[in-house]
Each structure stands twice: as C-alpha cells, then as structure tokens.
Length: 114
Image (tube, rainbow, N blue to C red; front, side, top):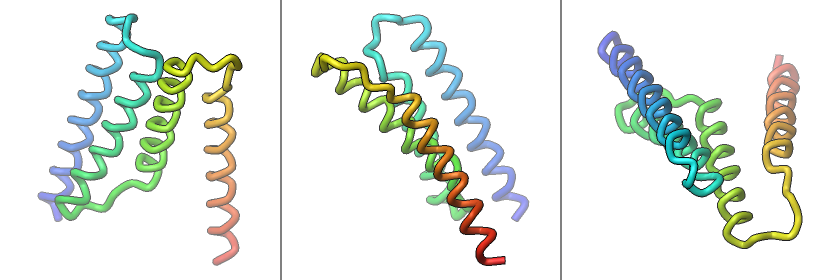
C-alpha cells in the first residue's frame, strides 16, 4: 500500500512537471496553433490516469473529466482555426457551464442515494 502511495505521488509530481513544461513551451512559442496548449494539458491529465490504472492505482474521475474536457476544448479550437469558421464559438464559456452542470448533477445524484 505504501509503495502505491509513493508511486502515485511520483506520478502526480511528473504530471505537474509536464504541465509546467508544456505551459512554458506554449508561452514561449506564441506561433503554436490556438488550442494546442489545451490538447497537451488534456493528454497529460489522461496520461496520468492511464499510468495510475496500469499500476493498479485508483484513477481520479475529476482529472479524467478535466482531461477529456480540455482535450475537447483544444480540439475545437484547433478545428475552428483550421476551418476558419465565420462565427466565434465561446468554447471556454460552454465548457465552464458544462462542468458546472456535471458537478451539480453529481452532487444531486449522490444526495439521492443517502
């Protein structure tokens, strides 16, 4: 048990390191496509949970959801830029709203079982 806790802390530390390195890269190279930062963060979060699962450590539903959401945000931003859509899609605002709905739904469902 103690070994898995240490391994999980190590995975968390590596994920945070990757997060800050990726964030720094996206800040240094402003010529990267819009959305690539979010895609990278989503992949880091999903990779963290994949490493946990492969090592028998319980995954985090929150970081899995956040990873999927940021991956979708980044993908939509990349698609919007590549397709040069004539309208502005408020991806971030829509995502925040959906996350709020997910949190509220989870809380309501958890209270129903009490």
